[in-house]
Image: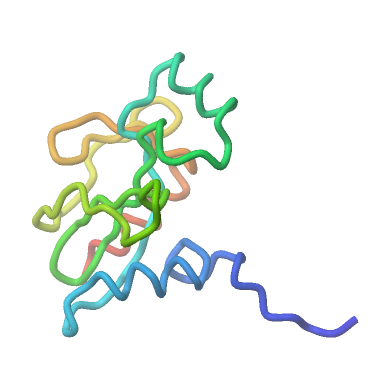
Length: 133
């Protein structure tokens, strides 16, 4: 069997190559992408149920990409806007030195808000490593 390039396979940035390129295009020309992970900023039981029912529908569940660059931390929507266009930027924050204590199966505090990281501690450890120069 031959080898086929797979743009859906996560690369060293934590996401697929196609998404990494789209996010790179959002950055300033001299800014470098270090790592990206998905987080849920509005996780409740009702939103979790809605997520299960709304696969493929624009971002009703509060899923964001946490984009770590060499200069800042960006919160970007996972889904594209309803009628196309660029991704929405929800926040641009200074780089923290750490994401703090991980509680439960993957809760951290980000920009003063508790957020859930679906990949849990393993993903958070990779993100913490990306914070270090």
